[in-house]
Amino acid sequence: MPALDDILHQKLERLEAKHARRTLHETAHEEGIGVMRSGKQLLSFSSNDYLGLSKHPEVINAGVKALSYYGAGAGASRLVTGNHPLYGALETRLAAIKGTASALVFGSGYLANIGVISALMSKDDLIIADKLVHACMLDGAKLSGAKLLRFLHNDTQDAARLLVEHRGNARHCLILTETVFSMDGDLAPIETLQKLANEHDAWLLSDDAHGVFESEVKDQGSENYIQIGTLSKAIGTYGGYVCGSKTLIDYLISSARSFIFSTALPPAVIAAADKALEIIAQNPELCATPLRNARHFTDILELPQATSQIVPIIIGDNAKTLDIAAALEARGLLISAIRPPTVPQGTARLRITFSTLHSEQEVEALAKTLKSLL
Ligand SMILES: *Cc1c(COP(=O)(O)O)cnc(C)c1O
Image (cartoon, rainbow, N blue to C red; front, side):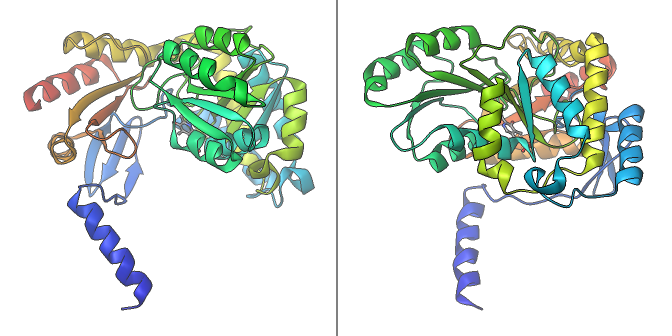
């Protein structure tokens, strides 16, 4: 066996021993919220397609039309010849829904985060991040070379303490958080963080990858507030975006490396995302249903009331979490077991996500089955 494979084999065995090895499971998506895995039909509570828009006939149709008219790929980065006319409409819609002057679409949410953070910050700067922010925000912080400090999750006093102690030594300062936390489903105290940022001459960047646009505030746009998001979850397609001032967007076009050096999205994806956003803007009821389903679930199980469509059930132990997920799968329910390093050590969990497509009866059936397994 070649030396590389020897070493990797050992590393895989160590992961296996910790129940931390990851594997891919072929999963075909069926009608509605169902999936097909290993020949078995399952009801999924683990998709981020919260509004069911990935399968919405009008979204699909917009994609199909653009695909046959413009072709399968963009052919180049946006700065070369890939800046398709469809981008303008999509970015105008994104800026309007987020209450900002401008927006810029990236290849994915991951690329948006690493590109924006590393374009804004560098060696003499300070980044203060919530303990639970997504891996791609931390990767962006590392790429930037800035000093990175973490504050306790959603603890604005701890963030204030870090700013008081360290802000003075840095040139620029950026605070990182998530609007809806991806693995916990709780919400960041955005207004307090904005105030804190203003008091300490810092900027705030919040990643709203898990937002479902149910109560989008129209006048969030403040100069020191940067909003990132993805087209890959509630919007049902693929891609990422950043919303902010016109100057911010102009600067990113010239300096965000993951924007400059990566091919533009396929035209069909842009057209489908634009249609999905149009549907979101016209159907507030669609956006309110995931949280209503989540609350119905937490009410039945007498859990703390859900604050978003994401409900974690923390089990702790990796192996036990995997066992419960397997038992649920045997009963026809697909729920993700989330383990470290995606979540902190000792907090392995079932991550349950609710969608517009779940019926009340399906939510009740899940609650009943889970009750019998916990
Ligand atoms: C999923 C996710 C991303 C990545 O977005 P993609 O479009 O899937 O690359 C970024 N940030 C957070 C918080 C996420 O949950």
